[in-house]
Each structure stands twice: as C-alpha cells, then as structure tokens.
Amino acid sequence: MASIGVVTDSAADLGRDIAAAKGLTVVPLTVTLDGRDFVDQVELSTEEFWSRCRSGAVPSTAAPSIGAFREAFLESSQHRDGVLCVTLASRFSATYQAACAAAQSVRAEVRVRVVDSTSVSVGQGLMVLAACELATKAASLDHLADQVTNRLRHIRLVGLLDTLDHLRRGGRIGGLRALLGQILSVKPVVEVKDGEVELLSRERTRRRGLAALAKEAVDHDPGTGVTLAHASAPDLDDILSVLGDHGLPVPTAIRDFGAVIGSHVGPGAVGLAFAVRPASD
Image (tube, rainbow, N blue to C red):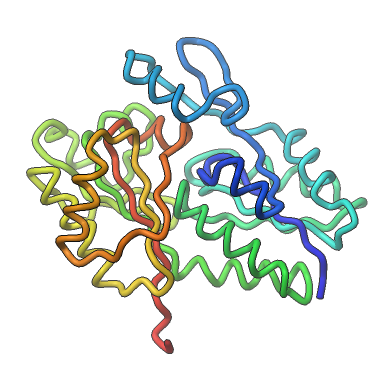
C-alpha cells in the first residue's frame, strides 16, 4: 500500500483536534471582519467569529494563497508517496484553483492530486474523513483520488436558513434568486449540490423547516449516520428534539459552522450531512 498524506482547507469545519487525530493538514482561509484580516482557526476561533457577527460585524472570506498550499503539500509529503487535497467547492471560492496551482508548482518534488468536493463545511468534512480512512488502504495516489471522487455521488449536505440575506450579500444565491423578495417571510430548506445552493422547499416556520430537513435525511437512508452542524444556534436542544420527533437518528457528530460557511449562511442556520447508502447495500 502507498503512504499518502491528506490536505484540506478550513472550510471543512473539522477542527484542530480531529485534524491532529487524523494526521490531516489544514490550510486556513482568510476571514475579514471590520476591515481586519484573520487567519481562520488560527487567529480567529469559531466562537469569536460568531460573537463578532452578533455584534454587527459583516464578514467576508478569501482563499488561501498558492504559497500556503505549496507549504502544506511539502509538509504533508514528508516520507510519503504523494498527497491528496480535498477542497471546498470550486464554484464557491478560488481555493480549488489555488490548490491546483500549488500542486503544479511542486510537481518535481511530490505528486499531488486535488479533488473538488463540490461541497463545504460538514459535507466537505465527510469527504475528507473518508479520504483519511481510504488513504490507509489505497494502492496508489490515483487509486485514492478515484475512490474519493466516487464518494462525491453519495454525500449530501442539506440546510435550513433563517435568512437569505447573507447568501445574497456574498453573491452565493444560486437557485434561490426567486425568493429574494420573500426573505423575511420564509425559511428556505436548501441543498448544496454540485457547488451550487439549490432550493428544496420553503417553510413558514423554523419547526417545519427542521421537519423538512429530517425528512430529507430519512428518505435518503443515510448509511453511515448523520452529522449535524449549526451556526451559533441558541436552540440546539429544540433542534435535536424536532429532528428526532421526525425520525432522524441521533447525529453521530455535532459541529459548529465555522467562519467560512458562516459568512454566507448567517446565524441560526442548521445543516445535515450524510452519505446516501448505495443501492447495492
């Protein structure tokens, strides 16, 4: 078996503890708040990010530099046969392009394959964790990249938004443009699919939106559990109660939406990520 390092970016919302446990290298994005730039998860914690947002700060994000990825690839390649990098969706950010350029720049020193997750946050995170697991068994870097790319078809990320204002402001409105005139009167249930935010349903209340989220997961028979993420939601116990009442299994993990996706979904958002069970199972 080949020895392969795994790299991702901070949009995967995996946190330092998980990264350390998995031997994962995380390249941080930059978050701008009140005119000041912060290195995500290094100079700005998730807790501080949401505290500043609640105080009225308007965030924005920027992709890592090519140099940051180059450094990460060289570090991760130590005593290894290659590096696999899984990035947030290329349609959301220039992060994927920066990683590809960095991979080209180190090609004489180490082989790197870059995979576009077409997702973000816990959806991207599920792919990264799968890559870490598969890397221990992969025959080669190309074999691992093919396996991880195949997982793209099975990962789903669905969410409930309290408002579309953050998506509109960040230019990530996608297929939800028709709802802009109804920002205050609906709770959109959305899916991140192929790097786009698409509308699944529009609900009048948060409770009905949570019920719709649970139905999405239950109807698609998640084969390996469900990861729940929230954007500084004050009603986490109520969220878990409503999801459970509508048949959702207890989440295998509960994580915070970090600054990258948080800049675009706003406080109160809830997300579910899960792998759809293959038909042959």
